Image (cartoon, rainbow, N blue to C red; front, side):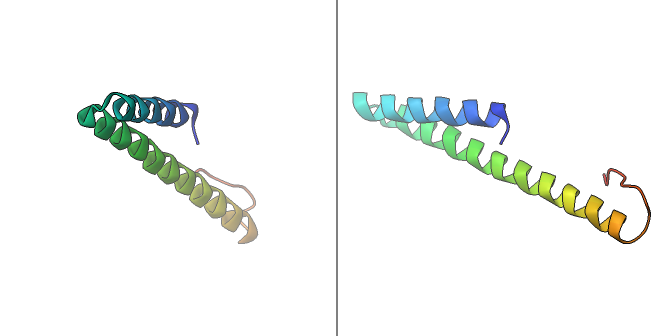
Length: 71
């Protein structure tokens, strides 16, 4: 999880709570959307990093001798 995603989750959560506290349904929904979007982006980033690590390890095990960045 990157710091950017974590900040977006916190901001979204705060907006969601502020909307719930004031009865502002639009603010609450907006905060929920922001928080969930950040969670999804964070998960996608984690999956991408893990896939790269697995690809590098496979290259080393298959005997190429060095790992390259699979892009």
